[in-house]
Structures are given as C-alpha cells and as structure tokens.
Image: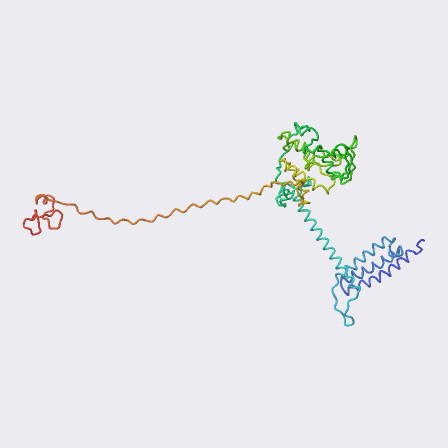
Length: 429
C-alpha cells in the first residue's frame, strides 16, 4: 500500500521524536556524562531500529526498509553496551541497595565481549609466533625442514627410531645414471630363499589376504587375492592373468635406478640381485601408482595416503642403512620432515642402524704460561784476603842498604840474625 502521509506529517513526527530523544540525551549526559549520553542515544536508536524492522519501514525516521532498520538497531545496541560498560559505578541509594538486573546483564555482556576480544587477540599473537618459529625451520621454497633443522631433529630423536637412524645414512649428490640396466640386478624375479617360489609370488602371498594358489604349484603361484593397498588406502582385487595382473605390482621401495645412482654401481651382480629380491625392499601395491612413482625418491614422490608415509620412509631408511646406500640432502630433509610427525616410528624388519655417536666438541688445550725468569740473587762480594807477605831476604847489610831497608828491625821483612851481629834487634846499624 502506498504511503499516504505527506512530507509535512513526517517532519512533524520526526521533530517530536527528535525532541524527546534530545531530552533523554541531555538527561543522560547530566547524570553520567559521556557514558550516560551513549546509553540514552543507543537506547533511542535501538528502539527506532527495532520498530522499523518490525513494521518494515519508518518513513518519519527516514528508514525505508527492514535491513536499514536492523542496522540502526545494531548501532544503537553497540552504543548502549558501550555506555553501560564505561559508566562509573554508582553508590546504592538508601531506597534500594541492589543493582537492577538490567544493569547487571549489560555489565556482564560488556565484560564478556571484552574478554572474548582479548582472548582472540592473544590467540592471534600465539598463532603468529608459531608461524614465525615454523618459518625459521622450514624452507619456504620446498616446504621441507632446512638442513640445520633436519640435522637437529635427527640428533635429538630416540635412539631406536627411524628418524635417529638417518644419522647412519650419508648425504651427498646423486651419481650419473649412466650404464644403468635392470638386468644388472638379476634377470627378473628369482628364488633367493630357495623355497621353490620366485620372489614376486612370495610377496603376493605375504601381502594379499584370502589368496588362492594355482593347483599343482605347491601353494606357490598366487592366482587371486585381496590387497589393502598401502599407497592409496584402497582395497584392490588381484586376479592373475593377461591384462589383470598389472593392477597389483611389486614395488621396489628404494627403486633400482635410485640405488644405482647412490652406491649400487660399485656392487657385484650377486649383491645387486639380492637387493632386487630382498623382501624388506618389496611391497605389493597399486599398479598405476607404482608406475607413477618410477625411480623417484622421497624428495620427488610420496604415497598419496598420508597415513602410510611414516612407514614408507622408515622402510626406505631401513633399506639404505642395510645396504650402505646414500641419500641426497633434499631426500634426507624430506624424510626427516615426515618422521618429525611420528618421531617414534621404528625401522621395519628388525633392522638396527649403527648410529655414529656424536663427537664431543674438542676442548682446546690451554697453552701454559711461560714460567717467570727468576730474579738472580746477588752474590756477596768476596772480601779480599791480603796476600801473605813476600819472603824478603837480604844476603848482607850491603844488600839491605841497596834496597833502602837498612836498618832492618826485628819483625820486619828481611830481618835476620846474620844482619844483627850484636843481637840487639837492629840489623845493619
């Protein structure tokens, strides 16, 4: 129905409502200051917005739809809560010592909103801090642990875990694929355990359930069975035959070509054949996924089933530990990245890695300080000992007079009885 009220009537209603709102606003400001003004203004907007939302419009308030009315009511509610939360506490009057339920409800709502905002800010800060810590450990280009972070994870891992066993695998570059040929690892599947069955049928019998064997093969040739495929997580039906056998294939967990480029070139044919037929390195898996893997290592291919990745890379570590093969650094980082999510994942097949013990940091031997040169003790100056008087002898008084010694007294050098004939103690008188 069209709105029959004219502009004059709308302005009149608007003026009356605005006047009443202004009186309430002034009263709120006078009673509680700015918080009181917010409360009264918010209450007015809330009531007008709710009325417009219920009626569908409020032309006198220039609100043309329920949507706008809802916005006005929301703005009013925010002002009402903000004013209530910031209003100073008032002392209870003598007439009533209890706070009204409406005030309590508004205060609780404001405090709850503030607490929720604070918790959200704290959660965002913690998330940001975790992200920064992760960025320092993970290469932003590859999404793998950095070299230093991978080494730290391996060093701190439990001694019986596959993660710790990575320390026993050398990291260096991939050798050229030149000269590789599948036949260098033996001609097809062989019977290495001498049980009368080739390795392919041994692995099918091990990994399938409900398997049936070809009659007359002494339970050797598997013709049907069900595989719980570890790579895809799906259940596959196996049926031997042209065009059907390929649905389930036997995968070398460490591909033969990958082994060739990481140490197997130096093996003899017997060791390569044993490697190609080792049950530790073999799994019955989905055929198309095996073809997609090719000769990829953990840095280039992983099973689509994330639930199996820990067991998958742990088996690769066990194989490389057992045969002394090396890894590229990217491959090692990829395996360490996966195993940090399952640090207690053990090596399969009872493999034990010879984990090198960490070498202690050499402590430099302190250079001894040179001993101080002792101050020489001054030696006492020897007192000169007078030389004994020379033995003077005068043959006669003529000689004594010639020497200027006459007369010679008794006790003087040169005195003698032969010079003192009268014996008075004076010679050569």
